[in-house]
Each structure stands twice: as structure tokens, then as C-alpha cells.
Image 1 (cartoon, rainbow, N blue to C red):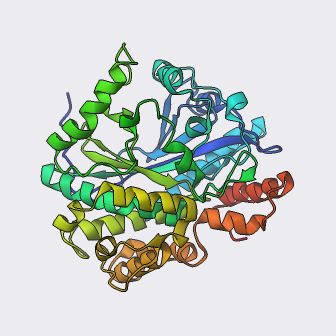
Image 2: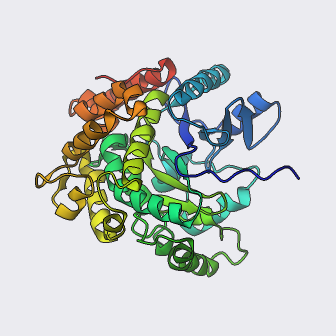
Image 3: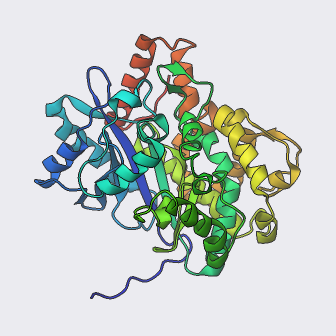
Length: 414
């Protein structure tokens, strides 16, 4: 047995995972060929393929592939180059199948009832169990692509501070990251349709997702008692073989992984190219870091923020993004805002301008962050491109351009 890896302290490492759908270059329909893609890369059928600083792996469905840092990265700036390089390689491997990767938090016209194929190789018992309980041939399972951001903690004290800060930041993430305004071939009325379907995909067992915002618990013991134990108890009634009874069953917007001392944030839609993905991740980290260090507000006031308050704000930002109204004074004060009610976008502009001067990561990503904070998240720019026309032709043209942005590594500018 090799030496045990040192436990990372707060912000000593960052794990980033990006999910992409594989589609036909001609029709943009999803193509369930990720098993063949991994075979082409590795020379055999595998669930995961490591390539330099990144790894590629399967997801629940066969048309989605995940690219992730192979272990924690020391910094976020520069990581986008590794992702962009691997996206270029994957698109080259997909070319003989007339396929390519497509960004965006949800496919705009996929019919999951007809087009979903679950992963059929290793770990298929897990996926089959999920399908048996929740029907994975639905948008909330088969049609959603996100960024997962993993942040480490070294001990119980750091876990508490990190969890308190993450809870406070979660409702603001759709403001900068929403990228899924179209589903079933039409504009849905939600900027973050991915999260709207995600939060409802396990209604059979409500304890698995809760209110998406995690409960106000700040020690491992409290977390296991309040969140994990009820979830394990409830799933055991349906999953008699114990296949799903692990920490990853937790489907809140941020989940504690005590098996690796991290909190995994799941509320960020995938963007149009990795530079924007990493920019959103860096801004998320910057806000969380400012809160854990009590730059804006005390740890005590963060802990006292109610789950209902955060949940209600999240529902507003899922629908309205930056236009969501923030009128709860104690919440605004957590970010040093004392000017009365404002929009969620105004609040984030204030936070960004306050943090940017001393945060080199925010300076590095000034281009994509300035775009997001001036013109809105990718979802708003998709709607701008559609110009109130969600005809099949308009949607196709817009999402073709998104595919070109990913392949060429550039921002989506209608």
C-alpha cells in the first residue's frame, strides 16, 4: 500500500467536471456512442480513460461524456486549456461517426422517452436501479449537462465554514451559469430549465433531493444524522439490495463527500466553452472563499440563514436569472450590500467589483465574467439569438453556433 494522500485544506485544490452531449453534426440529434468513443481512445471498452491531467468517463446515459481533472488541480486558471485540448481530440475521434460534442445545460429538442439509452457496461446495476425507481427516460435524468465543482475541507471546522458559505452562494449560481432556456423544441420560460427538471426528478423519495439547498448543518455528525440517515432509511424500502445506499445518492445542489473530504457543487450549467466554465467556477470559488474568511459577514450570520429563504431565491433565479428580485435584508447583508432590495445581477456585480481587485483568478477570467455580468448568462444570450423565434430552424441555427463555439474555443455572442 502506498503512502496515504495528505488531506487538503480549504482551497488547496479544485476538482472540476464538465459534461457534454454527443450529437450528430447534421441533425444535432443525440448519439449514444460514448462507449465506442472511450473504446476508440483506450483501445478497449472502459468506463474511464485517463489522458494527462484529465480523465474522460461515462455518465448515466450513453450520449453524455464527462471530462474531469484527474485529481485536484492546484489552481483553476489555466485548467481550461487542458479541457479545450481534450475537446479537440474528442471531436476528432467523433468525426468518422459524423458526430461532435454539444455544450449547453440541456438538449433543445431531445425526446428522452424515445432517445435515451442507459449505460450498459460497468456499474449498470446502479443505473438500472435508478431507472426502476425513478424512470430515467425523462429530462431530469437523460437531458442535463452540468459542471461539478469539488472543494476540499481538512477537518470539521473547515467543513462547517465551507458548508455555510456554499449554502449562501447556491441560489446565485443560475444568475451566472444558466444555459438551458430551451427544451422539447420550445422556450420554456425558465433560464435554467435543467435545474427545474433536476429538482423534481426523485419525488418518489423526497429526502434524496430535499429543497436542493442543503439543510443548515455544520458538522459531519449533524450532516449524517439530518441528511444521510433519513435518505438511507427511505431508499432501503425500495432498494432492498442496497445498491444505492452511498453518499453519492444525495442529490442536493451541493453534497458532502466525507469519503474524500470534499463538498461537490452541482448547480452550474455547462457553458459554451471551457474558458467560460472555468470562469464561472473561479467566481463561485471567490465568493465562497470571501464568505469563509468572513470578509462580508460573520460565520454565525451565514449559519443562521434559513433553508426556506435560500430555496425561494433559488426558485426565482432558476426562472428569471439575474432579474430575480432580492429583498431579504439579512441575505443581502451577507455580501456587504446595504442599499436595499436589488436584482440578483446587481448583487453579483457588487460582489465581483469588490473581490476582483485582490483576486488574480477573477482578473484572469475578466473577459468571460464581464460578458456574463453585462449581457447575462448563456441562457439569456441564447434567447437573444432566437429573437422570440423558437421555430426548429431558429433553434437549430443557434445550437449549431454553440457547437462551433465549443469546437473553436470562443464565447457565444449573438
